[in-house]
Amino acid sequence: MEEFSGIVSYDYYVVAYLELLRQRYTGCNPRGLMLSRDKVLTKQVLAWHRIATPAFALFPFGKRFREPKRLKFPLFVKSATEDASFGISQASVVDDMESLRERVEFIHSQVQSDALVEEYIDGREFYIGVLGNTRLTTFPAWEMDFGTLSKAQAGIATRKVKWDPKYQKKHGIMTGAAQGLSAAQAEQLSRLSKRIYKALHMTGFARLDFRMRDDGSVFLLEANANPNLTFGEDFAESAETVGVSYEALMTRIVGLGLAYMPEWRMFEA
Image (cartoon, rainbow, N blue to C red; front, top):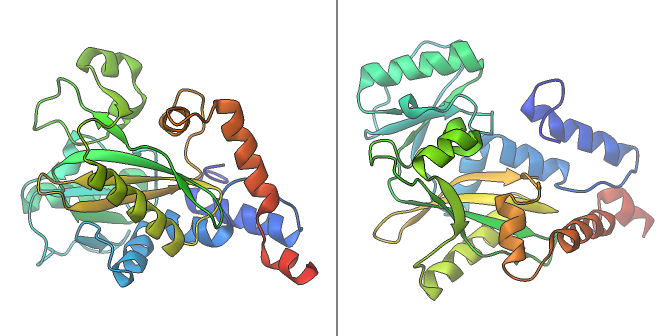
């Protein structure tokens, strides 16, 4: 599940309730969901672990706009809690203070959430699937190809880029196995994904979204617990490239749910 009663951050309450009932489930545990769903908390945890994320400022819902002093334009404005690119469009990347103010106000009024403002990271966008509870497996890097979109438009995974088949076809937008990565870069993404997964106490399965600059520096954009498992989507396709069929992937996820050891099972052991 991705939300409860229309609120994204409530999903971990449902999973916590299942644990109170001593019911098993697939996917991430409550702590991992809480840490990864809160994008600011994710950044704070990863900063302690010295894992790079874009520099940021938080603009709380209902509070007056204050100009950030330490961030450098261009900036990227999004909801601090919503996912699936909700509230993201080409206008989310801003180049001046007035545009920033307008976009923060848009998030407050239309999305009804805190606004998270990050320094925009120009570079290639990679998605890494992670599977496991304690022993972790990473799948090959998947990359977003923005097709014929101009440089000014590219690099922003809007709702149209992600979910609009006509728009994707028109501009040749697609995702697929990353091309041209060195063995060292692929290993770097794999190791970094495992570190983040553990730092955020995630279990089950997740997809981690990264940007890599031309100089090779890597930044985590988002940690997505319980990503889309639809047949033909990125997570399943990446698994299939290393011989894990869709049926086998589902079986492994169910097995991880059955094997996960919440505290109540530890006391019974």
